Image (tube, rainbow, N blue to C red):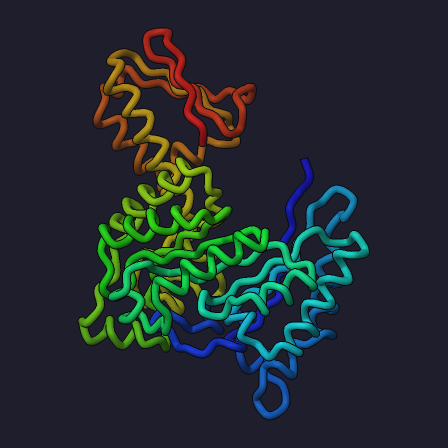
Length: 356
């Protein structure tokens, strides 16, 4: 099986016409504006063709290209709102690498209200494969309170167009924004699923330094989810996407030097292994669901390389499982013959398989 590598090209804030209440792109991407700004304080003077080539070449030195799948990804800001000539300049570099067979995919992220036929034809010409939309919420009140500057209709229209043009469609949703609730988060996920994305990212909203949401938090206008609340909601949403055969490629914001407790995260459900917690809760609840219908001694067979899925968070959810069943009748066996994406549950000599 080939290893998958992403070469990230950060274009912080360039092209983005709005200041969403949760966003400080420089902090979130790990980019410092002082480092990337060129003459006259303009980011585009630094993020140019030469910058992309230099970044790609540096990454390629560390990758065995013969045994790898490689993707160039344009993150940050709103790529399709950048000046069209700047888009061509950056994308042409990625296209050259793709045509030479050096990289396999080109990805970008953008806003739903900056997608139309002209843009999509332009992206097709430059061999773009994956377009991720910053959906965040599909509740009109939440979108307004978050300063998104677009409505639900723009998301529906953009998603349909991207699917119609044959791109891989990604949705990025964010739970716990101003005006949010568990019910609205679940509604957003269900609405998103109806739009048929191929992939999805789920982010719990964090209160980051130097954002409008920090001011709202300090003034008690906004209350973020607790870690427990965020895990519970994300677990439910995660299972909805899995049931719909939509691949969830990330849960939780990527930790960086800045995105960490005691650094730029002021409040909110941050955890460096947030996805592990969500998946562990899901797995342990599925085990209990099987047990509750088939009382008896439980033997959990799991590959040693996947034990963290069972024991994440210092066995937080596994201990809950033990409390709900007679712990004397529960045993865990590490078995490297078990498939990595499976857990086998043996209850009274009846075998049940859980996919993870």
